[in-house]
Image: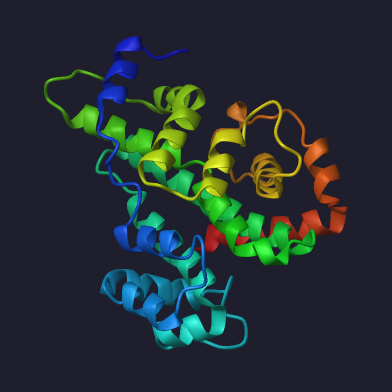
Length: 274
């Protein structure tokens, strides 16, 4: 561990309520966790936040989602893409807005983290569809988006520490990445538990770097494979911290042919244009 125990202590003192989720996106995620929500209810929730509504509409009309038709309203988008996919876009749009900081070194890492997380979301959706798990595509998207939520929390925590005049920590990229390496999984699980995030996403956060995982957990297998491949596609700022060392087990479980991985790479690189 290359950073001080004093810094770790101050990180652990930071409140778990640091802003890593938009309340509207979180409400949609929890609403759709166990049942199909009424489309009008979804639209009503989204319309509580006009700024988020505009971001969702922009993403729904982007090259990754638009297809042949553009949407002019949130209702159009929900009718075209479905409540679950729109809820995924709500989470993505709100996450993009949260990956900013007034501290240049933190902001730089946050921007790289957003590109990685969005790329993994797109890759997980692509892989779920191509590996015969189309019914899990929206869950896979959210799994890819949220697997590194612990890193966002840690960045927010270190930002707070750096801005506190009573502490004297100097942040640099090496320190930020070292903290990630040792703490992002444990803090990610802590965040998922605190906010009552559905257990399937908690499992992804907890197991995307473990040496062994449950081979029946398809979402974990998808995220592990996509996360690993993000290094080869130059969509991960921190390749030295990638685990596991290979993904042969994941490829075997998902029965993924090479052409599907090529398509996944293309889908992931769309994230660089948004």
